[in-house]
Length: 366
Image (cartoon, rainbow, N blue to C red; front, side, top):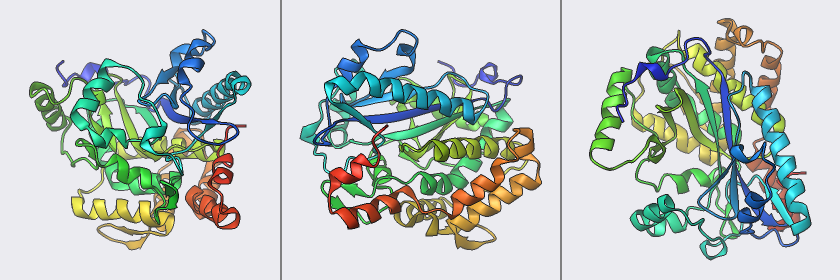
């Protein structure tokens, strides 16, 4: 497919939102992974079925919203879908948990979903895919044109540590404390086309790389590009993929709104190019230390929390939240910036209980 196609963009409907949330299935009694997604797919209501997708593991499902006009609308859809799925699974002892990494799962515990695409990936990635036991949150924002696309893309690279820190939800793996706040991020980076992508000056330059990946047979679709952020050339959206999965309605709503605001703001306020090593360090600081990690840029050396608060103030001053009818959410975003991360809460819970099942129950959909 030719990747350079301005017709994919949405000049009449910029900033619409789509959210994808990957959710794990666990046994309600033991909290162990439950390979029961085929059961859920067999019993989905017709209205919900198009929005529930299979994933690599049978102990996982993905909820995909329709195109929504606000973060509130998208998150309402996610919550309703979660509760419908919870009701379906309850008689079978299936619980849903927003676990970015299951605390005590081993690769032998989960079965791969039979699918030709997954078979090809398994053959290529070998042990890397066998240990790919993670769940994430993806946010799509519609783009009006190619200038907004590349500016939003570059701004996403710069600020992705903020979104990672706000969503960090994977401090445990293989029965131990990893010492990180988002171990999922390090697992994901094992894939050959994952992690922080490079900065591009123009959308055409971005398309040149994507075309080369197609021409070489490296990818068959844009879905085979697993960067932390990508311009989705099927939907005409910018897709943020760096976030851990989690179950917290208000946090989810505010993170989606923050990304919607960033892409709107970046269209008129392009960011300076940063050295990729600095961007990589900032991401490490986020997944290791959360909001207390250091954020390095051209003018400031402070914490990720301080960078987040500075960005919120800049967007408020520019009227971005007013454009999104979200002025009242500025104070909520500021409060969120001062809260402990989900990983910190889970670590605190584990220190008290010394029981991973108790930690998982904290993230069960109710």
